[in-house]
Length: 103
Image 1 (tube, one colour):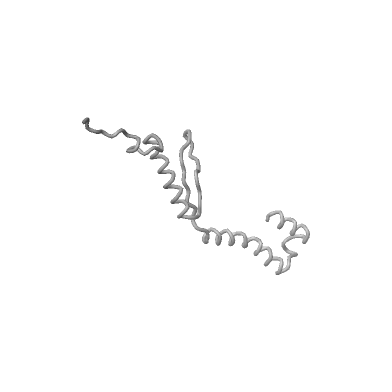
Image 2 (cartoon, one colour):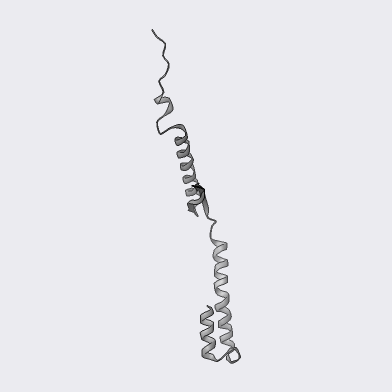
């Protein structure tokens, strides 16, 4: 944008030679990107982010604008951590040897 203004001023000979329409165009060119950024930031839903630690560094694991999808991924990660903590995917009751009385 700054380069474009510089080229425009170079061809016209300076600010004192610009017409009212050129000043209006310069104002729109300067303000329009700022307005678009503000509008986009306001209308865009917030990003849901899932962060983790890997070897002492924070890492972005997952990011989504959809709250439902974020909840599904979070629950799946929690289930995977529980499975890892309890020793695998086997059902603990099915893998256990139940006590039966001797007859």
